[in-house]
Amino acid sequence: MSVVLTPRPGILDITPYVGGKSTLAGEASAIKLSSNESALGPSPRAIEAYKAMSTDLHRYPDGAATALRDALGALHGLAPERIVCGSGSDEIIDLLARAYAGPGDEVLYSAHGFLMYALAARGVGATPVAAPERNLTADVDALLAQVSARTRIVFLANPNNPTGTYVAADAVKRLRAELPDRVLLVLDAAYAEFVERPDYDAGVALVDGGENVVMTRTFSKIYSLAGLRLGWAYCPPSVVAVLNRLRGPFNVNTAAQVAGLAALGDRDHLERARRHNEHWLVRLSKRLEQCGLAVTPSVGNFVLVRFAAEPGRDAKTADGFLQKRGIIVRNVDNYGLPDCLRITIGLDHEMAAVGEALEEFTDDTKER
Ligand SMILES: *Cc1c(COP(=O)(O)O)cnc(C)c1O
View 1 (tube, rainbow, N blue to C red):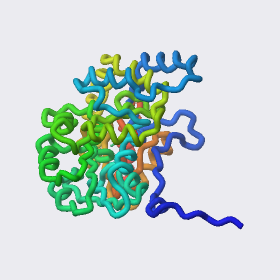
View 2: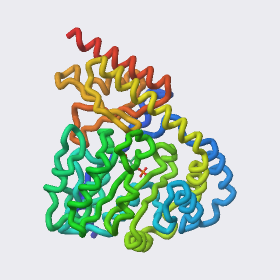
View 3: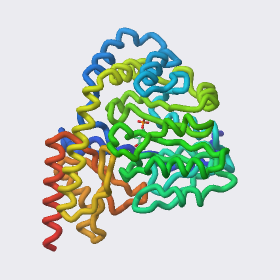
View 4: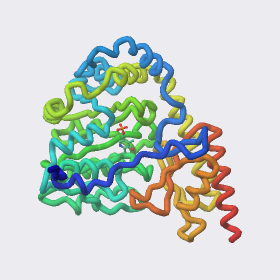
């Protein structure tokens, strides 16, 4: 006789993560603006390195990702021995949850924060706790107000996905200062390279300031290597020692390591991606505002757009309207934002298409 096995508590409470849609039925060349991948794609040098490693597929990866960590260290001015690489920063988020939280513990994040935090918490049997936001922005006081004796980790996406908003460096510093020392603060800076604000900081100095801050980064966004799964964390020595025990010995595959390394060397490509984003972030935001839509000011490579609540003019209808025109954006219901859609900055013609489509949508629906 067979029985259905019972997993550890928390696991079946997880709503499985659903990524951005990538195809539309009957649409060969859909415009995909649903997963925040960089518009320009990866550096040609990364693609070259990826192809070249195909002759080495029989070899295990360098489990320590030495060349990659050395290059990251040189580029960012960090000690390579304080860097841990992961199969995407999602893996690092998961490892941190496994290392520092468990049943009976609480994992704190802001209400519209990145979904992975709650998933990672539940995955280890911990309780996810969401703090309210102010103007769709993480609120340091609200986060601090939710801290309890059971809080073990605070995850802060800065800038946040899907809102695109950020918390200024002095406020992040105050958050760390006012959190109990026993709470780990994880600064998820997945979009750091896109941010052009003098009061923004990804968090290196805070990591250096003690034993209880970690900064995570990714190659999925501006480097556009999401398919290879590559992320990294800058950590205090005590956290490095923990993550290196917990991670798989070969958690980062060779393709990711060589392509990531090559991508780091192509600063011109990164600069093009940044400039492209800056250009369209402003333009698309303006164009959508001129349509009467509310656009949350974003410093990432995407915008969160709020639609009217009335049936026929709402986000769901807009999503369907865009899909009929072959444009895929992100529905953010599961982030508690049912009135909104998240639109990734894409190529010139894609931005023209989405702008035109939403102009048409708002024009059509205005007349009713
Ligand atoms: C996309 C994203 C990540 C993660 O990406 P990986 O592909 O797992 O490196 C992490 N945090 C935020 C806020 C993101 O939007």
